[in-house]
Length: 193
Image (tube, rainbow, N blue to C red; front, side, top):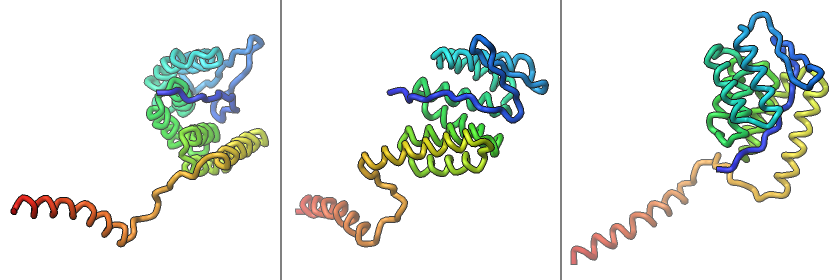
């Protein structure tokens, strides 16, 4: 299975304060979070910035085990899983983060980005619209606009994929049924002779 390239962007955390240290590390400060969750999250972000998503996933998994209702840990875990090729768990955790905090820009943005990478454009555009509704800064709106522009360019260059959102017509079902039943009936009649 090929891995999904997935960039890690730093966002303004609504309930967690993120501060950039002089050495480039991200320090998470939140009085409500337990020290262990904060440590695991900080370590996971540090590992992600060093290009070690598999090790970061372990940190984010521990943070999710300690506090399963912490959306930022689910986002980090979803990104780490996407980068290591674990697409379905990545989708699950990003969706969980969006469910836990419906107004979380980053959860919707990363979920939409992953949907685009998986060529599920319709769901990607839906998530980008939700992200745009949650955007509070010009930079967040710009990120959404840039990603949508890139997606539109990719769609112009690629073949149209079937959406399978229309039911089959009666004529098509009749032809399909006849093409399946005819050989069966022919074989049955031939065996009777």
